[in-house]
Amino acid sequence: MKQLLLLAGLLLLSLPAMGQTLTLDANGTLYERPDQTSAVKMELPAGIELTILSEQGDWMAVSTSTGIVGWIKKPAGEDEPSDDLDDLLKSIDEAGQAVE
Image (tube, rainbow, N blue to C red; front, side, top):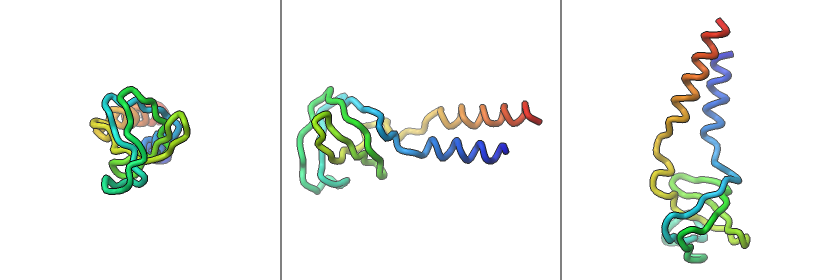
C-alpha cells in the first residue's frame, strides 16, 4: 500500500500544471512551437495572465485570455526542485508508519 501511495504521489507531481494560471513578471515571447526559431505569434507584456495547457521540457503551452495559444520558455525558477516532493515523501512515510 505504501508503494502505491508513493507512486500515486509521484505521478501527481509529474503532471503539468494544466489549467493553472501564470502571470509573467517580465515581457516575453509567444512562439508557434516550443522552439525559439519558430514563428513568433506575439510579444507578451509583463503582467499578462496565461493559462498553462501543457509542458514539454523547458517550454509551456499556454493560452491568453483572448484564446491565442502558443509556447513560452518556462520562467526562471519554474523547474527548480520543489520541497513539495520531500514533504509528500515524508507524509507517505509517516502514514505508512502509523498503519504498521
